Image 1 (cartoon, one colour):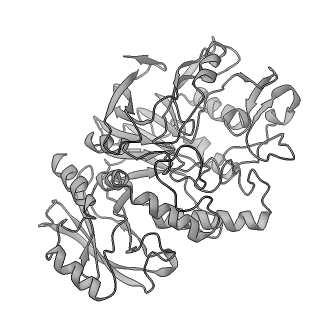
Image 2 (cartoon, rainbow, N blue to C red):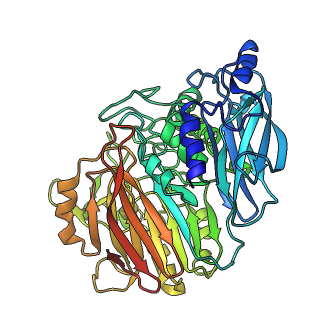
Length: 520
């Protein structure tokens, strides 16, 4: 939508000071400065978790984003407005809420009472200042006939390793929703740097708040949040690399890890457009949920970190992920081990084929298919942090798909910093076994990878995997209709140029009723 993109991309570059203001921006800013506050909305606005009658809208008041308190001390009343038009001539919902210091002056408003399947515009007003304008769209009624859905899919965005320019192209494609599959921030500094993170390793609440705020200052990321409602899951780097429940790779003492996870989850909630039901309590935060889009698609948004069992066969020096020799680690096949935890499994397992949607999607953080590989000594191995380290949960899911036969089953993943396309097999040990669905893994927004040669050598041992490439960064653009599920792999020409272009380098189409993808 041209008008929306103009508002977002030009307005955000000036922190939205001219966006639909009720008074000249210079007058408002002068008044605010006289009260000791500069512009309150440098982190932009966002929406999320759309439903047929509404969505969540978010902002955070932070006139000094990198300060420990964001430059805010006192609580502040914030007005929110929903309009049918971009100029806010037809405001149909409005209210007030309070941004408190306890939650870093973040605002989460659950808007209800709207019409299904139409766009709305929203903004916030505080201390005489007006935020940038965001656009959100409601979903169809549950089970309603729908002809199309466009979805942008992203993962793995390291602030230091590049500019988030893939979102510029995503916004230009006018998606109905944006799905983020995890590693929204990186808690630690590593790899090539084009800009510096606020901390080399986040541990405290202040550390995580500053990282989230810094990431939100990226103009392209802000534009994407303002352009469409987001759906969110997380992976490990929102807390710490390779963490599993309350265990980390460096054997941090339990109480320290508990405090670290609580800090990370709180900062995550404070900076994401998620519902009030996700407000964390200590180190616990409910994120998994379903997303329904009429009769077209049902998507399970899963949590593969908070409830999982620890990785198997660790060493005294490494409590995280590694390639584990299968013959030396019988725990890999322990049927009691879970990626999702028993409560999430009980939530997920009855869902398959229940909604009768044309497309049933599993949104999870990483490569779902089995990856046959060897360790450095040439032994058959499994990557202990991925699904090959949690075979019982994967087998349970695929068994349910095989038994209940949803019309079409697709898995979407991230984490790998690379593109993957694979068949989901009933038995990965038997290439002739039934193909139950299709898998797509999206490359990273910026996080680098150096595994191309290694991945290519694996393909002969993995006939169900048809494509892998980790040499480029980008995102996926997915178009869903009752007839087909089309995935464009959109790669950016460079992550070192904030204005770099993006191009489609690979397109796959899955036809309804056919469990394999066609390379077009």
